[in-house]
Image (cartoon, rainbow, N blue to C red; front, side):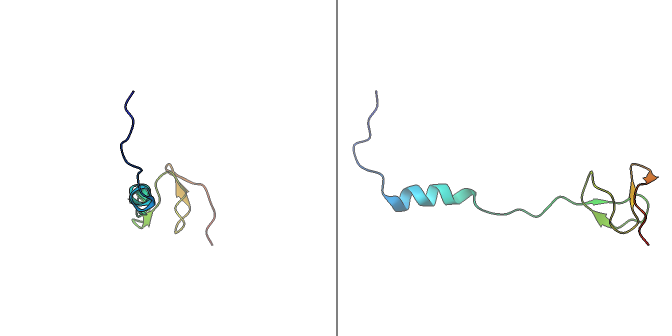
Length: 59
């Protein structure tokens, strides 16, 4: 079985783990009803439409 010759330093370990900490912007789609940006698979916060019907009354 393979065994490391030297101890991996804390900096090396932490820098490898920290490489996946970046945040990405949330996905956006366009509402077919009001043409505003919205999150996919969620009711449009501007007009209240979802899947071709009025799901929420936005007054």
